[in-house]
Structure formats: structure tokens, C-alpha cells
Image (tube, rainbow, N blue to C red; front, top):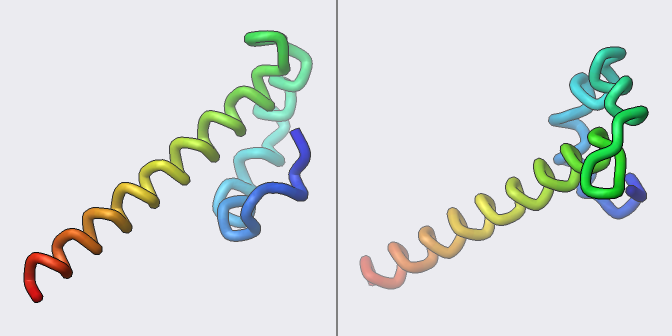
Length: 67
């Protein structure tokens, strides 16, 4: 996974996790054809984006109802 494509805010939040020695060991374990490290990072990033988008959409919907 190319870290350059990930949001800087997201990376700053998970920095202490992805640089943890035990978590880094997941790079050596395969899962779905990629390392468990990459898999965990992808799932975490994609879920955080979906939650953020859903939250934003709900905010827009509420704002429109109020108006």
C-alpha cells in the first residue's frame, strides 16, 4: 500500500499503531493475498472514510430539514 495516497490526518491518528513493533510484525503474515498489515490499514482507512462521509451526509440532511 502506498502511504503517499493516504490522508495525512488519518496517518497522524494511526501513527502510533502502525509504527508499533508488534503491529509491524503483521507485515510478515499474509491475508487475502496481501500482508495483514496492509489489509488492516486498508480496512481501517476505508471504514474511516465511509463513516466520515455518512456523518457528513447526515449533517447535510439535518441542516436542510432545519432550513
